[in-house]
Length: 341
Image (cartoon, rainbow, N blue to C red; front, top):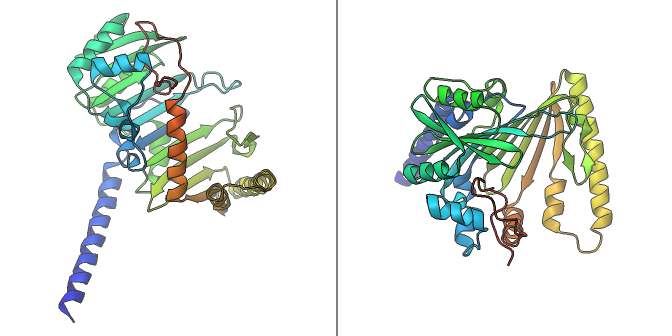
């Protein structure tokens, strides 16, 4: 056996060993700690933003004309979401299932914070504060809700619109081992190992079902759906819809395939003149199959399609209509940060 072939085999063995070790470590450590700190909810989501910046980084694409409230936040705290946020885990709880409004939420932000500057800013905008287990909880009005925020340590911040009990619970879980909310304990082990982002959604019978292109996905009601994103040169999407039994899963699959047939037909009619080939390829890649009591949805989004989405999203964010300047007690909104050019 030649020397080069031996080196190649050794390299492959090292890669295989490293991959196996990573997967074993991931299963042993469980879900990301940020997600394990969250309170119970109807929907959990997590995203690791560090790899996502490979596709596009607003903070580096060109100088941003920040909306005044967000500019003030950046100036006073030194923290910029586009540059400094590494992970975010969010829990939502529906309080009005008929209207389908997610009006209560809790989040853990992980990133690069200047704790002293951030605490000073929170103290400035808060209307009251309390100390719990040695940490300060700041309360500030924001629209119809009261936002509570707490700097947990040098890299994590918790925020919630639920209640003081929810914030206390997140702080308690910071000080002891926790497996996290029920949805996380029950379904996280089914999240693909190399996922950059995932969402676990318990869609109640009376909840507003998801929509796609103006069409309602009513067949997802009274189900639990787990969606995830991975990257291997293309973005790989997978969603597992957990049904009560195999017959129910088959109904989901049949309904989904019928929906996709209608959606693709409409797309062909609308896009007969100069349709976007990348969008068409993404839609055509959607596949649905049944595995026992689970309906499995998969799709592949090319790197060119991803970059196109980012390039279109950035100008839209940069040209968003300005909102009224917030009051001194308003927290900056992540979605409304840029002035119209």
